[in-house]
Length: 213
Image (cartoon, rainbow, N blue to C red; front, top):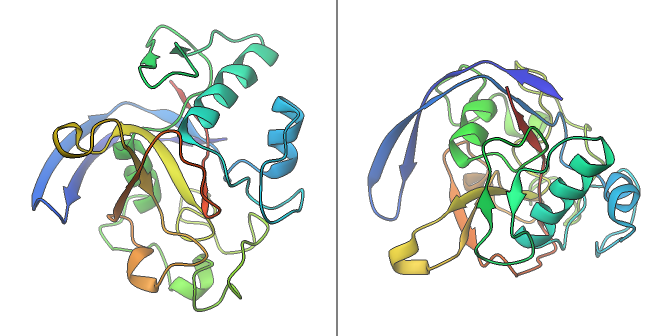
């Protein structure tokens, strides 16, 4: 995992034209999206459509990702962060020291790595997208990392975040970030937000883990 410094990030929503600032304490974030091999080690399952130990796990719902975080925490002797995992009413227990999904503010702050640009480098060098992926996912770590050493923050697979997207309009739908292997370049930007239902499993959606402190 990478130690991410605290800071302030401005999150914007293109659909509603809203923006808001979030102050973040330091935290840790996975260097790569969770791989199929790692997911299988923790859960015993291999849900992905494309197969390969080094490929990012995909075809996992938000609830699957939450349950993975709790299972990994227990395996490493840490206190699980989520209460009610397996249900849409999951609660985040801030007293837990285990693994969790990043908030979308944490995700964007880490993706930008101290820059104000839409991308942390030339897109073809940092991301797998529709124009260079051959329309399939690739092993994690195959593109250049950002300045903080994080790989695949853009492209390859979209990543689940903790946050509800817009409860008044979309109910329990959760936030996705980062763009994926089937997306056009405009989707692979640090600010782009997408949404999906927490039970949906999609072949270009995965996740990476975070820890507080």
